[in-house]
Image 1 (cartoon, rainbow, N blue to C red):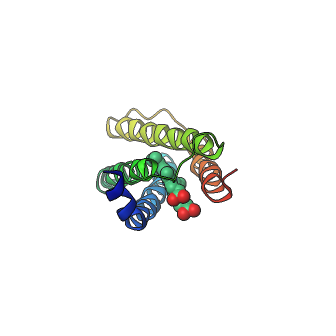
Image 2: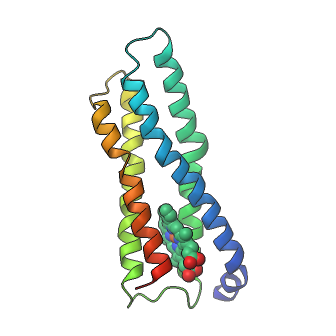
Length: 148
Ligand code: HEM
């Protein structure tokens, strides 16, 4: 099994990076959609349009991309010679990835609130939350590239 993972290594990394890019695109865009959704000022019909865009973005792109990122990422973890858990970088990366996954689920719960007409979160808070994936991305890329 580990021989197969070693053989697949470059292709696993291709899959990982491609799925990471798709996941991040959604994580940046969905909170921005929520800002516009909150601040639409009751223009007729827009609520339904936003709901459709949010549902499709989450279901068609973000959920599959997150799952693919995890699968390829875990394949890299189990590839021999890639991760040394006595170093610091795998732990900072793991913490940031878990936080990113929490953020994804937080957005998913907010989408359900919008769909039920129960959103309580202000546009200002969504603007602030929009910075979360950027900060986590900096931690993750620094971890995997600098490898402290
Ligand atoms: C979801 C769980 C994740 C796991 C288990 C995981 C695990 C890994 C592992 C073990 C590597 C191998 C590093 C190497 O080949 O030397 C890697 C590479 C990489 N990961 Fe992740 N990762 C995950 C999520 C993410 C996320 C969310 C991002 C970006 C936001 C990311 C960005 C990268 C990048 C850019 C590389 C390539 C680094 C290089 O080639 O130097 N990963 N990942």
